[in-house]
Image (cartoon, rainbow, N blue to C red; front, top):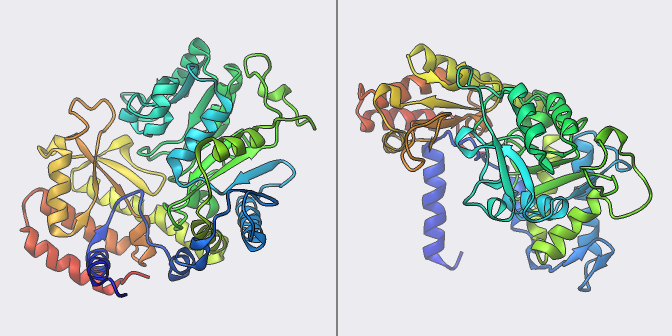
Length: 427
């Protein structure tokens, strides 16, 4: 690279990633093939519009690429193209979620999503997000005793508030969401059911987390978390006619040949509603990641993620750290640090000094502010990509415990971590 300053920064970041333990639940490491696709000549192409209906010339190959990516996305999750459509153009998860709401919910009406403080995402209606400014969020959370979703309480809220759409899925919830119950709740409120599976999409693809597609009207996901792809997003939508959800239940709602459909409305919300030309280089990389996620080795990878997360959470619990909800079913979990006298922000900083990367995070019913919450969020997808297994998770738990309890100096822990990282280089 001629730009030596940028080359130096790339080298520095490569070294940082290689020599630290990445426990950020929303990050992963892509394959070389994904990165090669991302840097391909497709970055030069402006493809505003959709296949067969572009606003610029020279898109014959881009059309083939986008159609292939759509086909791979539907195949990966076992979906019929007669019943489902997928939009592969969203730049990331936040605009994808915004597009769904823009398409299906009139401004000012109610949307129901998990509270950010309980593990939900900003774009599920939090007040600081545009989704909370354009729509009224009806929040739901977890039971104070179990720290799990109380579906009876969610049903009560939905019946009382009558939201237009209910969003299932979260960013810091370690348990499996019961989509069948969420479907029944949506039907009781005559609402659409949207599932944001951004965090666990790779686990669904790998067969270790229940699929939401039998119950949802719309499913959104990012590609860069457990799917190990580039920073991009997908929106899956049933090919149902747009309706007023207040007037009929989802069971009565049948596919018809009239328009607009949920899928077509979402397509229009993405373009021209929110975006211009899609990032064709990112779509290229998405196609590669989707093919990788359909392989037998990926299924083993997804299963190992869950094993690793449970091993890490279990060992930390053995070392007297409180794990929110008592454990995990997925790639992540929340750990209460304040009960051991360490704030979440302080814990994150201490661990990073030693070479362990996590993020500070609120825990349910947190009394501390989000900028310095009571816990940290831990995920194992990136370390599993490097080939680490349960044995390494127990070692990592011991190091986390030693650093946070100041039983080991950060410099000493950093040396041990560097040795571990050397055994498991990045792909």
